[in-house]
Amino acid sequence: MRQAVPKTNSLINQQAFYGYDAWLFAVALILVGLGLVMVASASISVAERQLHEPLFYFWRQLMSVVLGFMAALIVIKIPMFFWQKINPLLLFLSFVLLTIVLIPGIGYEVNGSMRWINTWPLPLQASEPVKFFVIAYLAGYMVRRSEEIRTSFSGFIKPIIILTVLSALLLLEPDYGASVVLFITALGMLFLGGVPLSRFFSWMAVAVSALAAIAVLSPYRMQRLVSFVDPWQDPFNSGFQLTQALIAFGRGDWFGVGLGSSIQKLFYLPEAHTDFVFAVLAEELGLFGSLLVILLFSFIVWRAFVIGQLAQARGESFSAYFAYGIGLLLGGQAFINLGVNMGILPTKGLTLPLISYGGNSMIVTCLLLAILLRIEYENRHSRRTVGVYGK
Image (cartoon, rainbow, N blue to C red; front, side, top):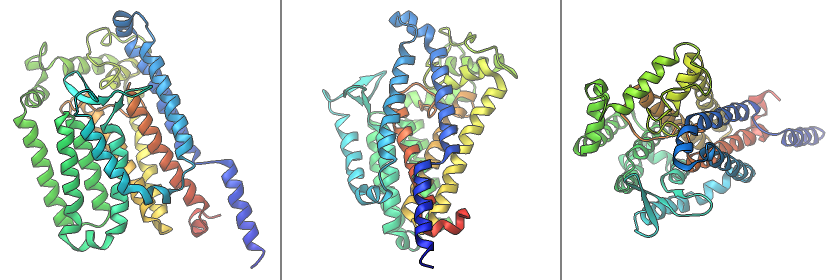
């Protein structure tokens, strides 16, 4: 028995040398590479006309990828107990970021929304790191209050109140899409944490009703809802963006018109390299290219839940809930963006993770995937999971 310990330690050291989850890393790398290609393709005409530099957005996106990769290399080395220890501080930082972005002179306005803080080398979009911080806080809260969440109303309502305040700050920017994604992620995490079904569905109905009321009471959001129901009723005004996206899907057919050959990106489809880059992808790569992207995102979500289950099996509830939260966030945001592009959901202004142009989204997504790789790494190297992995 004494000889088995050095053998196990040797195996752990070999695994540490060989690295992390190769499949998850490869799929993320494919999505990043595809995203860079599509950002270059979708933005080249706009960048040439506005900035006289065809690859302006591509180079900025590439810089974001490099920064995200460098940050991920640091985060992937940090043990999960560190995040568990500081998660209340991360919640405090969320409130700080969402408050100071509303202060004139610190936050600045772009396209009618005050979401950015002027930082170097990239402007900071406050809502993006808040997504990371909220997942970390909820994972920590669910570990500390696990019994209270399952048995009492107060255990469930406390994080809901916190999320409501954060959402109110997001709506002041305004950033309705981030509010929706945060609520979807939080409710999903609480459901997985053992909240009774009756309480979960009743409060989910309340959240949906509140978000719907906010949308209906806001004139420009109401206009989006009306145009979403029938974009062809006003195809040159409120329904213009969606009709152009649907034309892009129609032109793509089975195999697409060819990379770089999109017509809709030539000043027909607004936000072609950001919110609606998937429509350009569908036009250029067709149904098969679109399905590939959907399958790749499905793999990431599935892998996040598998990693979470393995963490839960070895008694690491914080890591498990964090992994679930990452899967719910990335899956929910991808689902909403794809739904908006295909005309099955109203416009939300959310990027497609790893593919759409957006430095903050890219960096935060890289950090979340680094956390996921770290959890899988700790699963693999824990002696308690030797039986689970069959090693």
